[in-house]
Length: 235
Image 1 (cartoon, rainbow, N blue to C red):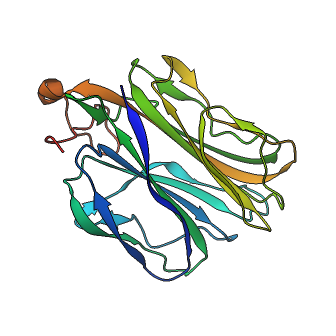
Image 2: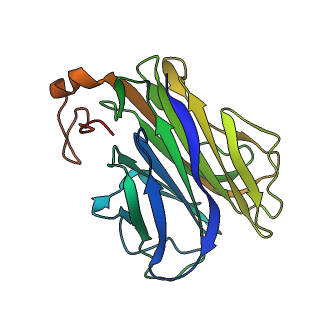
């Protein structure tokens, strides 16, 4: 069954680009990068990279349609080889950001993969109880991640659907991250219970597990095609 590990605690930066050394360990099958933009403007500059690997964005950048204060981005990378790399986050607008790295690990002999459809979701609004919307869980093994960026002056949710990674009150706004191990097959909406109405953006993604020796049955899709993304060799 999938397991979770925190790869890097939440860090603030506003440079262009944002760079730091990051070490991938054997068995780190999915690297998830949460980015909270502390601005009315979304981060610009394109996809983050880990050495020569390029992250893929889950859903889209989410922020409230009217008078947003923050934005939420969730990026992922499947099965990078172990080693120490430079992780680069382009930030051409030089906005203040907060970023966190989380890791999903599969059952020995299995790999993490992107399901055919419905694996990611994103939503935004100005309301209580922010939530990214439903992801579709199609297998009984896997791992889901979600993040929220909120304009609430005091960000202090009382609960979340999954297991807490962190909630952080940044003063004039805040944000949080959570995960769910091996969630039940069906729809999953990793939301937060927070009784104050304010602007927010939220993103979630679920990653399933496949047997390593069955990977030849899967194909790498283009951005517009269906299929399951190949996750490469053993990490």
